[in-house]
Amino acid sequence: MYPEYMMQDASEIVQYDTAGIPLYIREAKLSSYPDMQALCHWHEDLEFIVIFSGEMQYNVNGEIFTLRSGEGLVVASRQMHYGF
Image 1 (cartoon, rainbow, N blue to C red):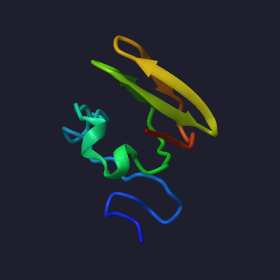
Image 2 (image 1 turned 60 degrees about the vertical axis):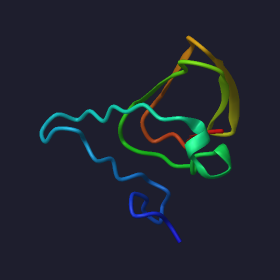
Image 3 (image 1 turned 30 degrees about the vertical axis):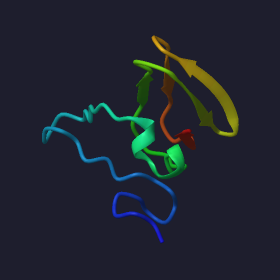
C-alpha cells in the first residue's frame, strides 16, 4: 500500500506550491517521519536537500551519503532516493 502521494512505481506525486511554477519548498524534521526514514522514491524534478542541524544519511541509487549541518545534496531527476 502506497501513500496518496506515491504511485505504484515508487514515483512521488509532487504538489507544487504555486500553479505554473514547478517549485515545492518545505522544511521538515527527519524525526517526524516513521522510523526517522522517508520512503524510497523518485520524481522528474531535481531535489535539493540542506541540513540545518544535526546530521542524516541520504541514499541515492544505493550509495549512502552522510550530510551534516550546513551541507547539502542535489538529487538528479529519476534517481531512487530517501533520507534516514
